[in-house]
Structure formats: structure tokens, C-alpha cells
Image 1 (cartoon, one colour):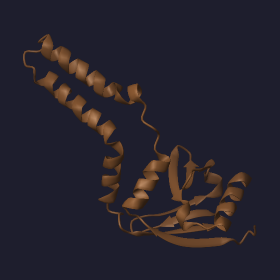
Image 2 (cartoon, rainbow, N blue to C red; image 1 turned 60 degrees about the horizontal axis):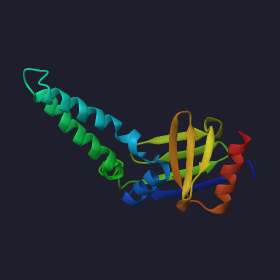
Image 3 (spheres, helix red, strand yellow; image 1 turned 45 degrees about the horizontal axis):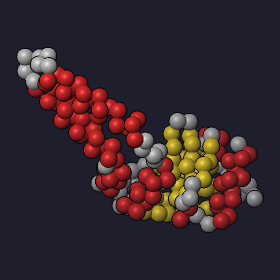
Length: 161
């Protein structure tokens, strides 16, 4: 591909995009590990209440209620994340996405960011998009707004750097 390649598109930050982003980037919930913190809170709260370790049982009941909140957090993780994103300040705005020989850039009402090809340590392909690994950060990009030439160019650029 030529060095003067340039592609620009735009996409909305809407509920559909946020759901796709979560589905493609989230790590699956594993039964015992994800619920350990809630289970610890529950056991600690029950021990405090049952054995009357404190003059008041409020702390024990607090940890029991906290365990319920933690279990709900794990169970409704996707719904909660999508809801927060949907009601964030950037929701509903359009994102202008550019790809060129220097890297990729995002521009919306609230933010503007440019990521050079050398900053991207890994370009991970998913069923419906790409996950750009930038150090410990991960940035999702949907393939729905890209064509085959851009996809090939991005893969080639990441292999070179």
C-alpha cells in the first residue's frame, strides 16, 4: 500500500456501539473467581452478626448487604456498563475516525486522540472489530465502519511496527 494512504469515516456513539464494544472486549466471567469478593463479604458479615463480635451488628449487616451488591455487580456487569456509557457526556455524538500512514485518530465533541502505529503493541482481530493494545490500555474499533482496503492497511502497518 502507498505511504500516502488516508481513510476517514464517522460513526455514532450509541447503545448498539457500546454493546458491541463490551461484547468484543470484555473478559468472560468465571464462576468461582468473579464471586469470591462477594462471598468473602457475606461470610465476614455472617460471622460478625452470628458470633456478636461487635457491640452493634450494623457492621455485619453492612457487609451482608455489600455482598448482595457485589453479586449484582457481577451478574449485571454488561447492563451496568452499557447503561453508564449510554448516559455519559459523549453518548449520541459522532466520532470522526481517520487512518493514515502515521496512525489512527479519533475526534468527537469531547475528545481528540491520535495513536501512532509505533504506540500500538498489538492489533487483535475479533469477530466484529479490532482491539488496539496501547501499553496497558485497549481501544476498540468496529469493522462496520471500515472497508477491506483499510482493514488490510491497518494489519500491514501493525506488522511493520
